[in-house]
Amino acid sequence: MFVELHLGSADRRLISLLKRLGYGLVALIISGNNDIEELPAFRKLVITKGSAWKIGLSRSFDLVSVVPWSRFALNKLISDDRIDAITVNEVNRKVLPSKAQARAMAREGKALEIVINPIVSNGESGLAFLRDVINDYSTIDGLRIVVSQGISKVSDVRNPRDIVELIRVLTGVDAKPLISENPYELLVDALYRRGVCL
Image: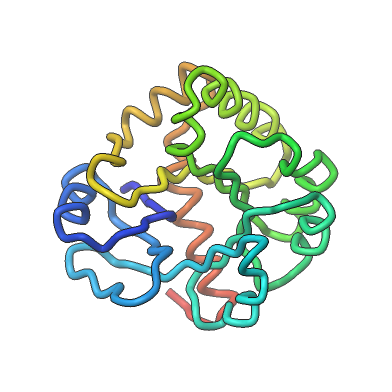
């Protein structure tokens, strides 16, 4: 079963396609209707520089991630119990966690989420960035790496098996856990921290 943690639409055709491709869980990053019958859907809050005030709403969501805007902000957010994941969704090495920050993330139970669609849309530089990020952070003990597609429409969808193969070719890493077990465990841990037992 594959898990998509960065879904920007509840369109029926999109959900149907994800189900046919083997997805079993999704997390919606949109507000409003998340009533999807075909797949279990959870609500995800993504905090950015312009929406940092929303962190106070974290109890209303199943999963909370932050797109870091600086390493200083990242330092503060790593130890925040309301944050479940640090999200990388652009080719920008300046906001990547340092090795020390990544080790702190692992100790705090935070995951590193990589949203690949906006990254690979940068061509060769995006693929090189993806390769480097996975190679660099997969060596840190206890750090859970999660790969999401970042889907907003049907044309954004890639076959998850193709993503596994792409990451394997780029890095030599078995990527299936990055889009199946790791995001599932991240979601279960986040729900547990919020008092929901599965």
